[in-house]
Length: 481
Image 1 (cartoon, one colour):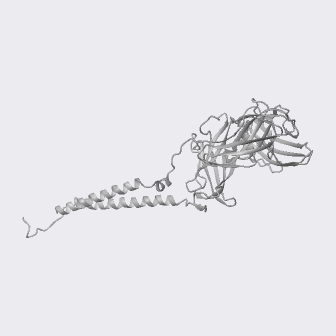
Image 2 (cartoon, rainbow, N blue to C red; image 1 turned 90 degrees about the vertical axis):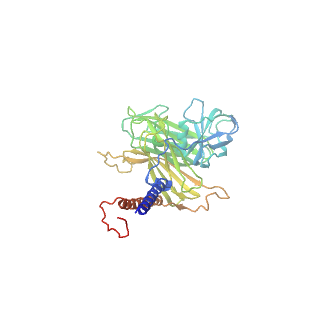
Image 3 (cartoon, rainbow, N blue to C red; image 1 turned 45 degrees about the vertical axis):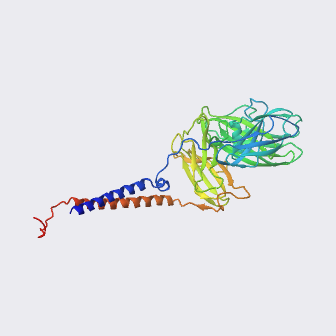
């Protein structure tokens, strides 16, 4: 009987030990198994630890006749790959000027690796500029020409140089912007509350040679900077003109709010400085909005996408909240990855709290060459009023708001090395979104079964040690009485 109790005791101890070990293994289960059912906490500040910039590399003063010839140094100080970067130059008549007289924007978009510095040689025709001294500032921005214009108006460039043009003006392209039939002549165009904004821009080629490889970029924005949520409408109209030829370009904002607006009309010609026109507009007497969110940069954590690669978008504000480290509204970012033809991945994420100043998406695929699209989404009432030739819908009583695209950055991420990159053969592979979740559930059920079995065995052993009822036994004739 004593041996039986001792044996039972050791069995019970073993069962308890097994239970503790099982619980320990479950507690220390791999993160890939446990994190699938939980949302890990994220840092509030954008993890992109740097930025892209551009500067002249050789002189702070250029004396030119017709062309500006120089080398620009394009830099990425972050640990992320930055794609779709354009270079812009803004020319001002004096240092205190905010709106440039002329500008240049590169037609090429650059991919910058983490920590990369790249020389960009430029030869820019400045024949449209009269003789005199100018200030030129350099800007780098991801996105299209309107985004570069937004970066110029944001004014965050410390790289200022001087151009001294010795020759007279030998080229001329006239750009005239008219808002609601009124030419401003430097004055603010005043509109009634709720009145739509219609912009007509006339481009005239007064040269003796055709104007080719050109586009007219027109923007209507709230505030002073045509970027992100502030940019209400924009158009990029191709311009090809014979000598003395004219072209009219138009854009409309038919869902205005009260407040200050800016209209820009900027001509873009390959490797040429061209004029920038600006019109100030005031709608109503008050201001409906004072801050506007935008994606200041979008980075990819790896050059060659793998299952751990993150696409990160940093969120900043224009206007009153420009110094804010966080958000004042719920925003979202939609990330789409394609191979140029087929969609490989798409997903939308939202900000979780007011301290979060970035959004991050893991596409969960491996590839050496993809096209990444990142779109900032803002909650707005539905804009159901279309162009002049579209039917106007009745939205009286409409109260639901939707996430509306306000800014999109599209760029290539590609391995440009002739020797290939370090991620294998570059074949596109997709991760199984349910694999980690299944692993977590299987781990839970496995260890739960161990604990339940151990508890049942322990219960049986304890009943043998402490029977609930006395057991009647017959005395053996060989036992002592």
